Length: 500
Ligand code: BES
Ligand code: ZN
Ligand code: MN
View 1 (cartoon, rainbow, N blue to C red):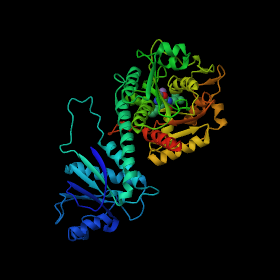
View 2 (cartoon, rainbow, N blue to C red):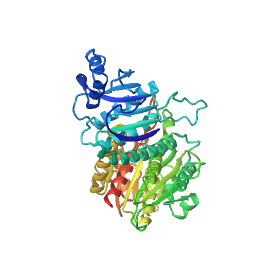
View 3 (cartoon, rainbow, N blue to C red):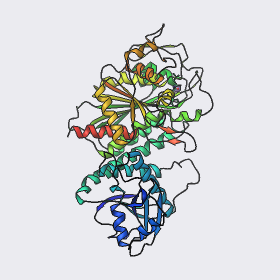
View 4 (cartoon, rainbow, N blue to C red):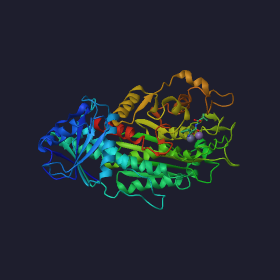
């Protein structure tokens, strides 16, 4: 699909479909008014008959309006005439897209950029629209023998701006929206693949594929021997029961003027299947543990978006690939493991494997002298209990970094909510046999997991995003969501803007 920006009046050209908003109680938006005038009052008559009241997300497709060059006009209900929330705007775009796909209009021009959204400008609406359209059109059919295709997909999508001075920023917004969408699609593809295809080596191949896209990218893969040489015993312990070799992929993007600038480091939990190991999970729903590499997929997708955006910053993305399986050679409850940092951990539950892998990666990244480190992981079921599926959990050892990420979540629509990381929680992971235990009991499970990680993230500014509730959805529409690509990419965009 080809997106573009234009300014000017409705219906100077012929389109398959024009999209205009109608507020509740059948109030016409400015562009709807113009179409109404052009068509000699057709819209106002129709609205008077009560065919469309402008309820948020309501749609009505009209064909061949008198005196109008374009074939169709799609009316989209925008709710009461006052600024709506960004989630409502997303709903609106979603309803529009569904109606357009049913109609099969190939060229579309939308005027919905004129709908006011709380605290957001025109370019933001363009960006969110592009993202939402890509998101809603996404299908994962790689593994189906028969693919369903739209009979007449939208080919051209034009955003109409009121004033021509709005178009420059809007064009940048198009680029940003497309880059984030591409990153999200990659994230979803990789996360949706089952563990018999997407194993740690496959994650490595995906990382390597980025090298071909930019000369700013270098990738290095660490296999079990290399992890052994680094003394990453905790990471290795998790994978030792699996036939699939653990692979840590390190993607280096050098975009800053000064190649020596401290990098932003992103770490993604990449458990390609989490059976729980010897502390085996129950059978029901266990298939969803193929998504336990959602953090790594999010980092991969973010690096993909970063390449398209060509941002002038240095970023390192790490995919911590590993599989957690029960076997005669698996690590067991009671084992005491010496981490790369030298700190020892008593394993009380082999299903708390994410932190075992991540802790060694947190130590490993010290070598890059990072500016900040952000890890993202489908780390705890407790995160879903706390926040459900709307926000990811954020914990940090540095309040300004936490604030930056909360803001990036707001700005991208991929929201995070902060949980406390007070010293008080450390008590829960005390062990009589080692420096710490790998679980902290039932209470505050997401926080004690982060408290564990924080012991390895002392030398730098660090934040942790638990995406257990947001990386995928269960049920009829089961699948990866593409989160946390938007929040991470937004954070990088903001950081890049700050150094200009
Ligand atoms: N990958 C899971 C967390 C998870 C569970 C994510 C359900 C999404 C949905 C993680 O490795 C895990 O198993 N965590 C345990 C920790 C417990 C043993 C302390 C959990 O949440 O039950
Ligand atoms: Zn896990
Ligand atoms: Mn687990």
